[in-house]
Length: 157
Image: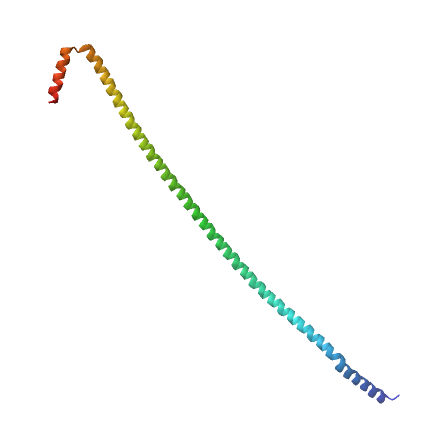
């Protein structure tokens, strides 16, 4: 066989193989590679977006947590303030009630003292009258009685 013919036939076969590969095999491979590159690029972009969204979510959760702590602190301060107000109001009410009770008790005591003094006066007057009556019955005779009445009348004038 002739070496030139073999080389030319191999060159022609190789050229047909290259043309066939470029025409029918290469385009689907390029499409598959491009789709894979696009899928990888989309995945990387989605990963980057996910990372960015995670950072934003982390920042938002930190902000919400900080805001919740601040709100809780405000609520606690308001509750403590209201508790203090309630205690002060209860103290004030108790003091007013105590003052009212003390005033009422003082009025009752004053009334009772006045009643006791009045009863004592009446009793003392009754005792004085009874004592004077006993003394007068025993010691005063009609002439002495007339003299006392005259003396009292003169003192009254």
